[in-house]
Image (tube, rainbow, N blue to C red; front, side):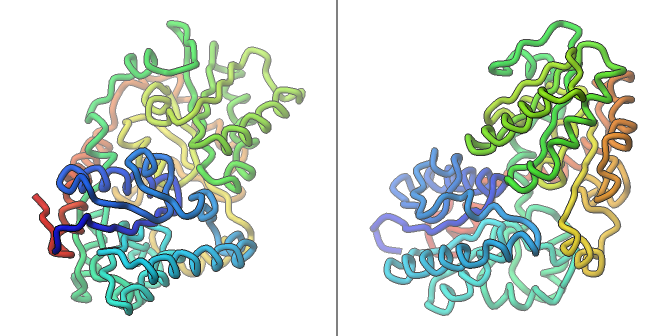
Length: 392
């Protein structure tokens, strides 16, 4: 490599990818402090100095039907990003998750002679394993966050490195609930308060589909649990405004219990989870974080009807929540489609407030240890090694 600063292109499509990318950027900067990062960035990446070409929120779309409704804008963004990096080629392009957006981009850039990395394996272990051949066309290296993913790539002889998950490195094996409650910003809790964390997702569509049901479920818990505090963390200002609007409507309805406290906070999801006695959340990376925080949880998800019909045919694993997928057994309740209703949800939540919520499930600790691999450093080193730059 020449003495000029490294130019690294990086695109994340949602909040979880923003966290992974930011950790890797920080580690690359520790070795190459003049490295330049440009792409599509979330708030954590921006804090590390990454320049963004578009608002990451525009890529935060999930579900086949939902993507189709935004397809023209998504294609325009991808074409614009491709043109930018064609005219100003980076030393490497890193697509962080968002495979439907990033893999076609990686394929075109790779054909131009640019090294490409895909961070977070597409779910080839869950459906359409033959996608691995398209991934091989698009990328020089896949960085996987789960150990069972590497076995699939090894079977096909394609370069893949298991790096673990940055959250497993950041979160203590036995988190301090009392300290987390003290550190919550903007929330006052009494000594005997019971805390229910609601995480209806980082995307607008998820919040629209789930939050009202989550609030109704919380109201049923409130009927049997004294001094219940419901805390809802928002990933950004846009989600916070959306959540507050739904909460305001709920408070005006006759279904709102006047003894239920509701707080909406910004970017404190981890502290909120650790502080909680129970968590109700949308399926996704948040369920992995809740597991690492060692809190009891209910994982719920709803899809558009057509998306669900397609996924029923294509999805192979027995479970959809990450704790259950990792354990390959049902260690947390997971509810889908019609099961996502206040009666069913509250049936699972209420016992969390009567037992010993401080008891840490040992399965959670074992899975945590498996994912604790110094992910940020491993990912940074793998990228730098690929492009022949100093990596230690």
